[in-house]
Image 1 (tube, helix red, strand yellow):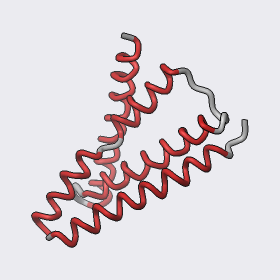
Image 2 (cartoon, helix red, strand yellow):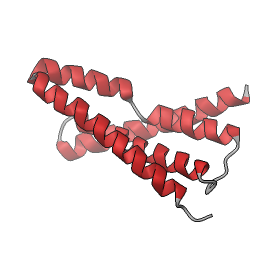
Image 3 (cartoon, helix red, strand yellow):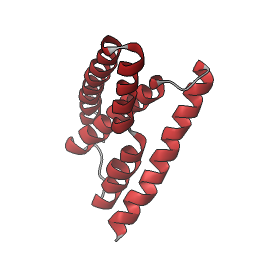
Length: 127
């Protein structure tokens, strides 16, 4: 039951943070935009990479409960792959398949690169 509570609380925190990014992005750009989802996906990618790398490199120690809270709860609530897919579909329908492909490939490539970079940053964090 404790793990479920960790996911619940972390997910609430991550979801609120995600919504904050939506609000800030809409205010900056003047309207809701797929850029909010892109920002969340990239921030989430680098965050999970840094944490995973730090754990793998023994630069960070976290209990299973803390890992569940952060990885499944916070980051799971914060990153939004399903919204990413919905935004891509909307781009395809409104602006055409080329724009949707740029969104899809660009976010996937950048997310993987940032996760890789974050992982290696995490491996090198001081103990």
